[in-house]
Image (tube, rainbow, N blue to C red; front, side, top):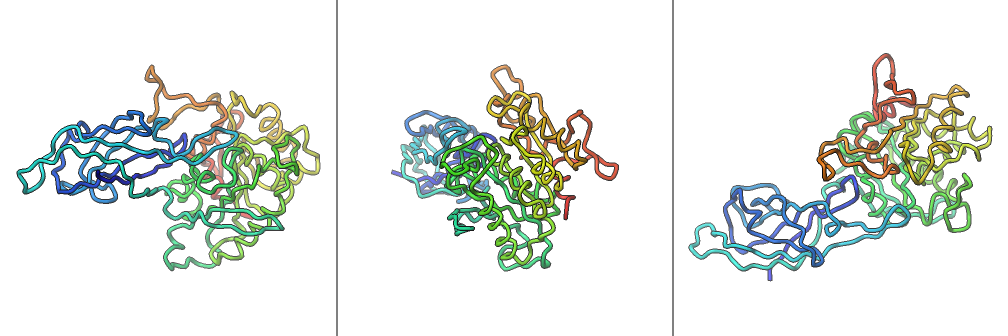
Amino acid sequence: MATYRTITAAADMGAYVSKLVLNLPCDVVDAEDLADAFSVCADGVDVGVFRAWVCDEKAARRPSGSHVALELPEVKATRRIGGGVMGSRELMPVFHVAQRRALACVGDETPLEGLVFDESTGDTCPDLRGWDLTGEGDFDGCHMRFSLFTPECARDGRAPQPRSVPLLLWLHGAGEPRVPFLTVMANRVTALGQPDIQAKLGGAAYVLAPSSPTYWMDSGSGQMEDDNQSRYVQALGDMVRRTVAALPAADPSRVYVGGLSNGGFMTCRLLADYPDLFAAGVAVCPAWNDDLATEAEVASIARTPLWLVQSADDDIIDPRRTSIPTYWHLRRLGANVHLTLFDHVDDLTGRYHDASGAPLRYRGHFCWIEVYHDFADRDADGSPVMVDGRPVSLWEWVGLQHR
């Protein structure tokens, strides 16, 4: 039996095993038709092979070598995370790869044939570069795990100028608590550490992603409650302050907060309770009910610039009770607030299509997909959001805010 290594990627609909790297007993020459040389099953399901190429240990293409990379489709059988919006779990498919035809070995007349790859030697995830998923501590009496992205300028002993790097607190939804891998990978939080958004946040930014012990919308029962309250307010405030204090490069005047669904609620809750802590907020499909908010809470939120994002066809959180009235309530108070309200959540990358070839339409709740691609750039009336006479996207706007 032969061995393989998995490579996990963060995609719009979660984490998948995107590639297998097969370990061969001899060197082979790269060829265009290598995909036909192997069949792949994941947990007994045939998943097919998109492309294949000769590579090094990290799947980088080589003209010849003793490894072959197989690119796999994003299908149920290759998922690394299962479950749904109310709960998720970590998965690792078991693969069985069979060689379907002989391959010529370099410098050897004996062909390579009949190999079966069914033993994994481990997994790597390039999208987690810069992320530390091992953080944990007691914050205001609450034990909580957290993940921290450190930008390249602050890694490997490098020291940016003191207090020069912003920090973004990012809050997950109801389906990703407790386990840092789920928190960071289930909804592609890793995009916040990628070059595009990092550049828009000033060139570099820390990202702090805590994992709630229950739900951010838990106001004391251990369950999710729709009352605009949370038992984790003080714990998160303590975590943010201690993290900024522990990072010499972190800029306390540019601490941002954002989150989706449950985390969108918690963004509004933190802005109401800590009006002087954050430089800007991003509330994505927020479960913050404007009709339950007091005038004092809304006035407190109005002190921090806020960008709301939702889709009109959200079937889980009704924007008519949450983001839309919150936006107009804040507008009446003169707040620096924007609302991007998509009609639908469609794939705008050109990568995913439905059976007819049209862009794939996601469930309306999943508007964080558009946020991670930074496609939010319009206000509630459809006009572009402008700063100093020029149009800006959501993350460009965030990067311009400071206390």
